[in-house]
Length: 460
Image (cartoon, rainbow, N blue to C red; front, side):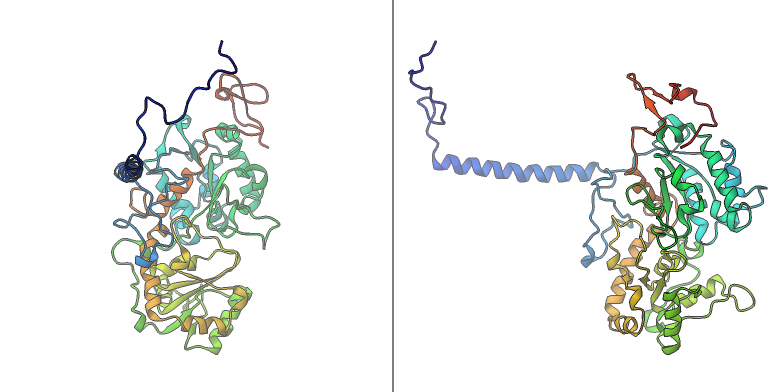
């Protein structure tokens, strides 16, 4: 055994077996480390770009040279999304679940799908139809990441197919027949609520689908309800449904006008509905009729605005004002992009879709609704036409995300929704009524295996 007084071993860099490290050696080693670092970074960058279907591209703050895109393809950031779309969605068939047909066509089946495609509610039909055609759709529930529940409830209600009480009862009946909904507590199920009412259309949503993924253009209802149905953690804001005649490929029915030929500085095309912001705009238009157009829209009779007339008016101003109505979101915000009029959002609580790739302060203006007045018109009049043209040009590049086209298109609303859904996928299924055993099997409270669950199943 070595003595405590033995001469200590030399573990240093210098000993009689090693050559002394000169300054030349140190400089050479430093150069080797630095060059290796940069070569590795360049290789990693090349490798990721050459192997990724949709490599990361940051559209935020890149507008000095225009919105960054490749041949009209807007790229989602990799962080939190992945480098490419990879998910499977099961779409429930209308004949599979008792009650789904009622939520789609009414109690007697009299509501036609073509009627529900129009106006603000059209997104509920379009998303359903486009998912049926999607390459990400699966017919196997066991391999599905997410489950889509088709329903045109808002349209059905407005056309008299179901009343509020019937909608509530029918949704509950539908959910009680879905074992996979019970397994996850609804966390992997998708519902579309396309109107300002949001999920409140289903009155018992807080009890039954408060964990589900809700697709809606409405991000805030606290002015109408004690709580909003929108949760930024799990839900997704979707664009409003712009008329197909304005979003179709090629020439839209109404073409934009050059700025020099637009008659008005700004316009507001909508009903007053007793809303403070809208009433202010109408009063302002009476004071400055040469600057602000607020026509008295008729929805019936000989003076009714047709679709073409509406968009012809909308295109005749540099700025399209979009105040809140019954709720925070407004379809006019999205319509403005297709007549190349800069939207001015006058709705303080509005939420906007796809904020991960769209920098909205580069393509639109948001103005405090409490300051609607001559100050607003003076501000808009002070903006040079060159700046307006720049906003219009950038808006032209991102408006494809407001078009409900197939996910096979380079850029579409559904493609954007799929990217957002990808972040919601969870492979672990848990609810208050789901339990699991040592072998990974799921059982209910009575210890019945998942494959043997039989509807109707008790819901929370």
